[in-house]
Image (cartoon, rainbow, N blue to C red):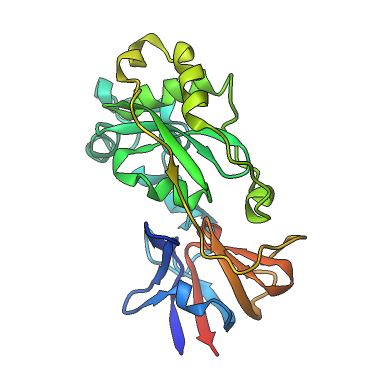
Length: 264
């Protein structure tokens, strides 16, 4: 089997285990079916996910020019507290920012290597947790816009981390914790504007990943430095492909790369 196309983050289906798909323009690939098989990846160039041109990818699948101009890469994406659509203040494109920012958002706890606090649109639950490689997660508040989620995250990260240790996550060096208790302990630190949105009655979501063997010493595959790679797929977790010999490949950070994939 051979596939050719532009890498984008793997699409997922919540199941036991999670189902992963690489989606190309005219084809798709159920990655779970490749476990235990040898895969060859050939780097063939770039294609910006915004302008579609063959330009070196800068960040998030976008070329330099697009990253600093399109609304989908505004600063409020990574820093929700900078959202201003609720004030009718434009960053790059107010119509776009209203569509994304002025919808229900979730502040959550996710446990992938350690417990961390995060923000995502309600429509992205549980996808966001899966992408982070979390084996358990729980909602803290559901607020009506991105700004309220952002200021809540800022307040809570004074008491719990907002970062994932991706190495521990991939090595499965994790603990099962009581997220309900941790959520309840954080309630008093929620900003006044968001206190009424606290969720007190939900339970943890548990997530199971398709992994045959976890790596011990991580070796990151960079297609720009190693344009041709071949190895047996041992697992999928977060947005990473886990290969034999402890090689790991971050699909998300390789968005916009044109690749040829052969399965034997």
